[in-house]
Image (tube, rainbow, N blue to C red):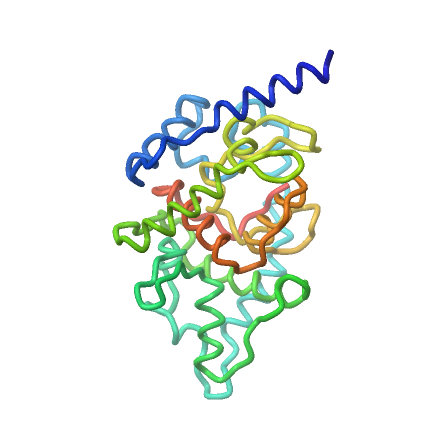
Length: 286
């Protein structure tokens, strides 16, 4: 009987996660954020930047989260990222030379649509591009080489820390940006894997609920504000693309490559959906 009930619940979830066809980004954003306002009416908007700890019934998790944030384990990785950022290249320049305002207060605009390359660009891409421009080796083989990926995640985490508290503002005004946005949106809502789940199934319908895991699921609103992040079970700072990869693994779907165009577009869509929220990256998560 329990299995039948669970099956019916899942069917109901799938029925509830059908996006409006061809809606424009502004309308999408309004509907997306309104969904969570209705679902969790007592949660202040800015609090969504702090993950599932702010959702109703998460008091115990929030207390634990506040305790380990007194001396956050991610500080070691963040210090490594800072050292990489500040260490001069062979030409005596640093990463700060590659970014507007020395990299301060600009991460709220990432990822962004680049007209020159006609692609979405992430912070990791621009950091690697900075290395290339200055004759330094890039971070490569991110799918297989955990140490290299984590170093890039730590560097990206420091880059994001320079914009802590800045409110997300993503530009989707150009035709190219809208196309990338729509591709990311399609991936977000598309069911995949042996479990036949979409991103929306877990992080909208089941947000705040424990669905076969060892902890409640986070809300989609604010999902990108904390990344790069350190999860307790990983014990290291990781990129949001690595999180996408593990999500696909959990629903038994084929994972895309770290830095793939579809993950870039997914991040573009997801980040736009959190427009107006303050950046909290890097952050601790369960």
